[in-house]
Image (cartoon, rainbow, N blue to C red):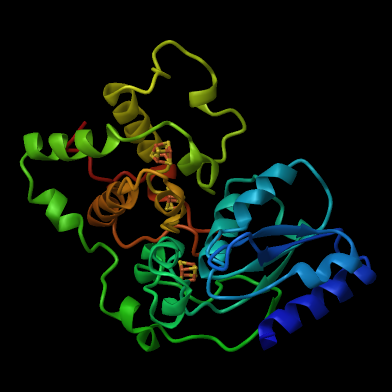
Length: 300
Ligand code: SF4
Ligand code: SF4
Ligand code: SF4
């Protein structure tokens, strides 16, 4: 067992025994060697389920939405991406910071579960990182009550250091409108409208989602047009609030490059409104969430 796993279990046990929290959210080993899945521990005798390994990619913060109206105190392990998601939920007033006990874990990057499945266990040491981790700009938690382990330096993670935040967006920008339309039509024609991308997203935190309301102007059939409308509406709804955690793309069973769309919008927002990354704190308002008289308005 690695040291972080031991520290996680010890801390979870202490927090539950001292009744400082009623629930601990972490990861446990899943059904396969390349899966580590969320686990919710409310009894001391279950703390040994908790683990930390190279497959703990799942962002736990989204699960706080299940308890958003509860006053239970919850402990949560947060990597860099999870901590940004917590900030997103606190800023959106979906959870109360005082109800959370955040246990930060610096993250060197998680291994790709899809590659692991394809290549087999003997390749474990050479597996590539999850795409979301290659693009990661914040490996260390941005907010926490206690930190386990040592902070990691971005430059030490070779795969990440070589990739810029908006890599790949230029390819989309270089296309003609017709080529761009064909590109997205091709990808979204594969979408099965499973809504995994929405369900896993910390920025998709509306109490009622427009895609569940059954309004006739939102086509619910799985058709190329309906799928594109879904993709565009979801991208607009998280514009300026997307924390770039890459979870939507990671969980998409149809390998749709959702992050290209999110990164394009994030890049446009930077160019229009200045440098901005969502979820770094809970104070800075998202650029599209407030108004300044000098905001660009040529498009209006
Ligand atoms: S996105 Fe960053 S913080 Fe999140 S799992 Fe990947 S490397 Fe870790
Ligand atoms: S996860 Fe992928 S397949 Fe499922 S709704 Fe989202 S884009 Fe479509
Ligand atoms: S849209 Fe995707 S990358 Fe952005 S916050 Fe949601 S899950 Fe994360």
